[in-house]
Amino acid sequence: MDIKAIEYHVRGLLEAIGEDPDREGLKETPERVARMLEETLEGTAYTNSEIAEMFGKTFSTPCDGDTDSAVVVKDITVFSYCEHHLALMYDMSVNVAYIPRGKVLGLSKIARICDMAAKRLQLQEKLGSDIAEIISLAAGTPDVGVVISGCHSCMTARGIRNASAKTVTTTYKGAFRGNAELRTLVALN
Image 1: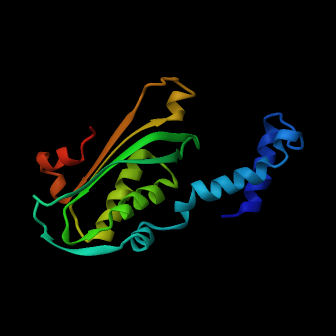
Image 2 (image 1 turned 90 degrees about the vertical axis):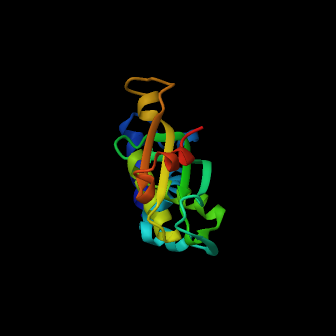
Protein backbone atom coordinates (compact mmCIF):
# COMPACT_ATOMS: atom_id res chain seq x y z
CA MET A 1 0.00 0.00 0.00
CA ASP A 2 1.38 3.40 -0.96
CA ILE A 3 0.93 5.41 2.26
CA LYS A 4 2.47 8.63 0.88
CA ALA A 5 0.13 8.57 -2.14
CA ILE A 6 -2.88 8.08 0.18
CA GLU A 7 -1.76 11.05 2.30
CA TYR A 8 -1.37 13.20 -0.81
CA HIS A 9 -4.80 12.30 -2.16
CA VAL A 10 -6.57 12.71 1.20
CA ARG A 11 -5.09 16.20 1.43
CA GLY A 12 -6.40 16.88 -2.09
CA LEU A 13 -9.81 15.50 -1.16
CA LEU A 14 -9.99 17.80 1.87
CA GLU A 15 -9.16 20.75 -0.38
CA ALA A 16 -11.69 19.62 -3.01
CA ILE A 17 -14.55 19.61 -0.47
CA GLY A 18 -13.63 23.13 0.64
CA GLU A 19 -11.67 22.33 3.80
CA ASP A 20 -8.32 23.72 4.87
CA PRO A 21 -6.04 20.71 5.46
CA ASP A 22 -3.72 22.96 7.46
CA ARG A 23 -6.29 23.97 10.06
CA GLU A 24 -5.87 22.63 13.59
CA GLY A 25 -8.26 19.65 13.45
CA LEU A 26 -7.11 18.46 10.01
CA LYS A 27 -3.31 18.91 10.12
CA GLU A 28 -2.61 15.21 10.72
CA THR A 29 -5.74 13.82 9.06
CA PRO A 30 -4.03 12.64 5.84
CA GLU A 31 -1.53 10.61 7.89
CA ARG A 32 -4.26 9.22 10.18
CA VAL A 33 -6.45 8.22 7.22
CA ALA A 34 -3.49 6.52 5.51
CA ARG A 35 -2.69 4.49 8.66
CA MET A 36 -6.39 3.61 9.09
CA LEU A 37 -6.67 2.39 5.49
CA GLU A 38 -3.47 0.38 5.82
CA GLU A 39 -5.03 -1.41 8.81
CA THR A 40 -8.65 -1.71 7.69
CA LEU A 41 -7.81 -2.79 4.12
CA GLU A 42 -4.98 -5.17 5.06
CA GLY A 43 -6.74 -8.08 3.32
CA THR A 44 -6.14 -6.51 -0.10
CA ALA A 45 -2.48 -7.52 0.21
CA TYR A 46 -3.34 -11.24 0.28
CA THR A 47 -5.02 -13.73 -2.04
CA ASN A 48 -7.58 -16.18 -0.68
CA SER A 49 -4.94 -18.91 -0.91
CA GLU A 50 -2.48 -16.85 1.13
CA ILE A 51 -5.10 -16.19 3.81
CA ALA A 52 -5.91 -19.91 3.95
CA GLU A 53 -2.22 -20.63 4.41
CA MET A 54 -1.83 -17.93 7.09
CA PHE A 55 -4.73 -19.22 9.17
CA GLY A 56 -4.77 -22.87 8.11
CA LYS A 57 -3.76 -24.40 11.45
CA THR A 58 -5.64 -27.70 11.60
CA PHE A 59 -6.00 -30.64 13.94
CA SER A 60 -6.78 -34.28 13.09
CA THR A 61 -10.33 -35.48 13.62
CA PRO A 62 -12.00 -38.86 13.23
CA CYS A 63 -14.91 -37.13 11.43
CA ASP A 64 -14.42 -37.55 7.71
CA GLY A 65 -17.16 -36.16 5.53
CA ASP A 66 -19.92 -37.29 7.88
CA THR A 67 -22.72 -34.74 7.49
CA ASP A 68 -23.65 -35.34 11.13
CA SER A 69 -20.27 -33.86 12.13
CA ALA A 70 -20.32 -30.19 11.15
CA VAL A 71 -18.29 -27.41 12.77
CA VAL A 72 -20.34 -24.25 13.23
CA VAL A 73 -19.18 -20.84 14.43
CA LYS A 74 -21.80 -18.10 14.64
CA ASP A 75 -21.96 -14.38 15.25
CA ILE A 76 -18.45 -13.51 14.10
CA THR A 77 -18.34 -9.71 14.00
CA VAL A 78 -16.61 -8.00 11.07
CA PHE A 79 -16.84 -4.77 9.11
CA SER A 80 -15.86 -3.99 5.57
CA TYR A 81 -16.09 -1.31 2.90
CA CYS A 82 -18.40 -1.21 -0.12
CA GLU A 83 -16.40 -1.04 -3.34
CA HIS A 84 -19.06 1.16 -4.98
CA HIS A 85 -19.06 4.09 -2.52
CA LEU A 86 -16.13 3.26 -0.17
CA ALA A 87 -18.90 3.26 2.44
CA LEU A 88 -18.74 1.29 5.65
CA MET A 89 -20.51 -2.07 5.88
CA TYR A 90 -21.12 -2.47 9.60
CA ASP A 91 -22.97 -4.48 12.26
CA MET A 92 -21.97 -7.47 10.17
CA SER A 93 -22.44 -10.91 11.65
CA VAL A 94 -20.93 -13.94 9.91
CA ASN A 95 -22.02 -17.55 10.49
CA VAL A 96 -19.72 -20.27 9.15
CA ALA A 97 -20.22 -24.04 9.02
CA TYR A 98 -18.19 -26.77 7.39
CA ILE A 99 -18.02 -30.55 7.34
CA PRO A 100 -14.56 -31.80 8.36
CA ARG A 101 -12.61 -34.09 6.06
CA GLY A 102 -10.11 -35.62 8.47
CA LYS A 103 -9.03 -32.30 9.97
CA VAL A 104 -10.56 -29.30 11.72
CA LEU A 105 -9.47 -25.68 11.85
CA GLY A 106 -8.60 -24.03 15.14
CA LEU A 107 -11.76 -22.13 16.09
CA SER A 108 -10.00 -18.78 16.38
CA LYS A 109 -8.70 -19.28 12.84
CA ILE A 110 -12.25 -19.21 11.49
CA ALA A 111 -12.81 -15.77 13.03
CA ARG A 112 -9.40 -14.62 11.78
CA ILE A 113 -10.24 -15.76 8.25
CA CYS A 114 -13.51 -13.82 8.33
CA ASP A 115 -11.75 -10.72 9.68
CA MET A 116 -8.95 -10.75 7.08
CA ALA A 117 -11.33 -11.46 4.18
CA ALA A 118 -13.45 -8.49 5.30
CA LYS A 119 -10.48 -6.12 5.09
CA ARG A 120 -11.01 -5.41 1.40
CA LEU A 121 -13.11 -3.18 -0.83
CA GLN A 122 -15.94 -5.45 -1.95
CA LEU A 123 -19.57 -6.46 -2.06
CA GLN A 124 -21.10 -8.47 0.78
CA GLU A 125 -21.83 -11.29 -1.67
CA LYS A 126 -18.14 -11.46 -2.59
CA LEU A 127 -17.13 -11.49 1.08
CA GLY A 128 -19.30 -14.58 1.69
CA SER A 129 -17.88 -16.31 -1.36
CA ASP A 130 -14.30 -15.49 -0.33
CA ILE A 131 -14.81 -16.73 3.24
CA ALA A 132 -16.28 -19.99 1.93
CA GLU A 133 -13.36 -20.45 -0.48
CA ILE A 134 -10.76 -19.74 2.22
CA ILE A 135 -12.42 -22.09 4.73
CA SER A 136 -12.60 -24.76 2.04
CA LEU A 137 -8.90 -24.37 1.23
CA ALA A 138 -7.76 -24.18 4.86
CA ALA A 139 -9.89 -27.08 6.14
CA GLY A 140 -9.58 -29.22 3.01
CA THR A 141 -13.31 -29.64 2.54
CA PRO A 142 -15.71 -28.78 -0.28
CA ASP A 143 -18.63 -28.57 2.18
CA VAL A 144 -18.95 -25.00 3.50
CA GLY A 145 -21.83 -22.67 4.33
CA VAL A 146 -21.54 -18.94 5.07
CA VAL A 147 -24.36 -16.55 6.00
CA ILE A 148 -23.73 -12.84 6.51
CA SER A 149 -26.07 -10.16 7.81
CA GLY A 150 -25.01 -6.53 7.78
CA CYS A 151 -25.87 -2.86 7.43
CA HIS A 152 -24.48 -0.72 4.63
CA SER A 153 -23.93 2.99 5.17
CA CYS A 154 -24.43 3.50 1.43
CA MET A 155 -28.10 2.68 2.24
CA THR A 156 -28.42 3.89 5.83
CA ALA A 157 -26.54 7.23 5.77
CA ARG A 158 -27.08 8.33 2.16
CA GLY A 159 -29.40 7.59 -0.76
CA ILE A 160 -32.58 6.01 0.60
CA ARG A 161 -31.41 6.58 4.22
CA ASN A 162 -33.21 3.53 5.52
CA ALA A 163 -31.50 3.08 8.89
CA SER A 164 -33.09 -0.28 9.69
CA ALA A 165 -32.25 -2.06 6.41
CA LYS A 166 -30.06 -5.17 6.74
CA THR A 167 -28.63 -7.21 3.91
CA VAL A 168 -28.42 -10.99 4.22
CA THR A 169 -26.30 -13.06 1.85
CA THR A 170 -25.74 -16.81 1.71
CA THR A 171 -23.00 -18.92 0.18
CA TYR A 172 -23.42 -22.70 0.10
CA LYS A 173 -20.82 -25.07 -1.31
CA GLY A 174 -20.73 -28.84 -1.57
CA ALA A 175 -23.17 -30.70 0.69
CA PHE A 176 -24.68 -27.41 1.92
CA ARG A 177 -26.11 -26.68 -1.53
CA GLY A 178 -28.72 -29.40 -1.60
CA ASN A 179 -29.25 -30.07 2.10
CA ALA A 180 -31.77 -27.82 3.86
CA GLU A 181 -30.94 -29.39 7.22
CA LEU A 182 -27.27 -28.41 6.88
CA ARG A 183 -28.26 -24.89 5.86
CA THR A 184 -30.22 -24.49 9.10
CA LEU A 185 -26.94 -24.99 11.02
CA VAL A 186 -25.49 -21.82 9.53
CA ALA A 187 -28.75 -19.83 9.45
CA LEU A 188 -29.13 -16.58 11.33
CA ASN A 189 -30.61 -16.82 14.81
